Image (tube, rainbow, N blue to C red):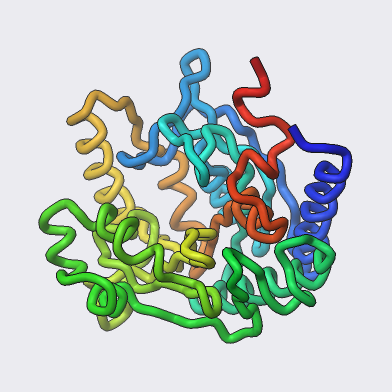
Amino acid sequence: MLSPAGLKQRSDFLQSLRLFFRERDYIEVDTPIRLPVLLPESEIFPYASEGWWLQTSPELCMKRLLARGATRLFQICHCFRREERGRLHAPEFTMLEWYHVGWNYLDLMRECEELVVALAVACSIFTGIANGGSLLRDAKEVRLTPPWKRLRVDEAFSAYTNTTALAALAEDRFDEILVTEIEPHLGWDRPVFLYDYPVQLGSLARPKPGAPHLAERFELYCCGIELANGFSELVDAAQQRLRFSKELAAMRSHAQPGTMPKSFLLDLSRFGDTAGIALGVDRLLMLFSGASCLDDVLPFSRDELY
């Protein structure tokens, strides 16, 4: 349970997030967290709520707002995922998600750098920050000065494993190898953008022009911790429907319910090139405050609610 000082620290952090986006003419939205249908994702398990679902992400609703003419949106909200509990996971967590029409994933990488640097300056009195220009973690100093490193997924597999990304996919071991052999090395000098994932792992990301076997997707890592997942949005409704069909088939194979989000697909073709990103607010606050786990930056841990 956070002390009054910890609550103020968290409040200051959230206000700094909001200020960054308001100064860039983003609209803050607060979409419903309880929905009758979710985007099909076979590796994410939602909580049921009397026949509906608690959101695992605000993505569905935010994109539908983009289809109505909004061009820059952000949201700070609670999301819910079953079977996620640990030092870096909580079944209920705070997510920052934002979208910018007319951008691609490279534009988002630059803005993500600017966001973290601006937050570090605004929160420079936090114990995990040194002079607003670097993070302190495990007696190491992680420089935040842009540009941060860009590392392709295939380069990461070559550098840190004895296999390739495609071979890991074929063996159904991609996530296992990424988490155990690659992630621990990432982001200890400066934060790292791991980018250009195999297209099979970019369910909502568009294929890369000239390299359709890759998806324009990236993940941000700092101190071996994944902080964000972003991509150039796939806005081809027919292709997205095919991808969702595969996800729904995978969900049915292990008795996980799911429904095709028809209204979402109808809206998807109503906006053009767009980039979007989801960032784990609690994880970034954990790094900024020098905490060792998410529970240390949450007003209440789950066990304290009993």
